[in-house]
Length: 135
Image: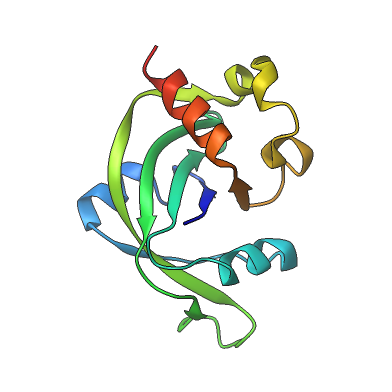
C-alpha cells in the first residue's frame, strides 16, 4: 500500500464535496510526473486531500478504489484518472506552513516540487501529518 497527496482547488472540488459524493474520479491531472504517480496507484492506497489556493492545507484522507484508467472526458489516452472515496476529515487542517516548520518533514516531495498535483507520501510523513492534525 502506498500513500499519496492529492491537491485540489477547493473552489473547484473541495473535500466536503468528495464526502457528499461518496466517490469521484480524480481527474484534471496533466503533468507528466503527476500522471506517472497516478499510474502507480492501486486500490487500497491512501491519499491526503490537500486544498490549494488560500487554504494550503491537508484537509482529509481518502482511499484509492480503482486502478488507473483513461480519463473518459479527456479524449487523450495518456491522461488517466483513479477513483477515490473519502475516509475522514482530519480533526483540524494541517497547513503547508506547519508542515514546512516540522523538521521531520524535511525533503517532503510537496516542498521540493510544489506545483505537482500528485505527490508520494512516505509512511513516516503520513503518520506525522495525521498526528499534527490531532494536536
